[in-house]
Length: 194
Image 1 (tube, rainbow, N blue to C red):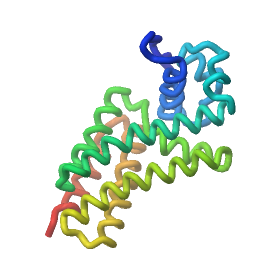
Image 2: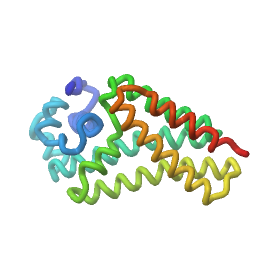
Image 3: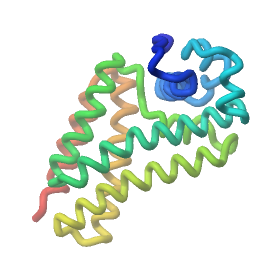
Image 4: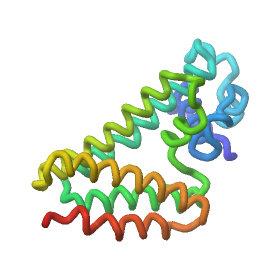
């Protein structure tokens, strides 16, 4: 686990959030402890309770929300400019880059939060649901604008999100982007207007 490089331009609060997200992506919610975040971020101990009075739970919730925003914004941007096939290719490209640059060590913080954190922090579950809903809505809206029936667009958007997230997990396990490439190849015909 590589600590975040200290940078006078980034606050200790931001470094702690970035470290929490990195720990989620690499090791899951179970790895997010106050000590691990402090070591990773190189932030002073007192800064945790200054910025996150609720301790670990407050830090984890803020990190899930930030990760959700950081991941949702580019997906929503891609889906505004569509066509659907290009949005899918570009979303997969974002993941391909993240997986390769982390040597397949970094996955989805949102998936990690929902899998590892069940029942421990209900507020994080809500943030996860909201994030997935944003992704599904972005793809569904793009499909509706591309003349898909609303119900089919909704179902296809669920398929796209589920397939990409599943492919990311397989990519990490196989240390290859092939599962992501396979998913994109199979989804593309479904996203071409008939």
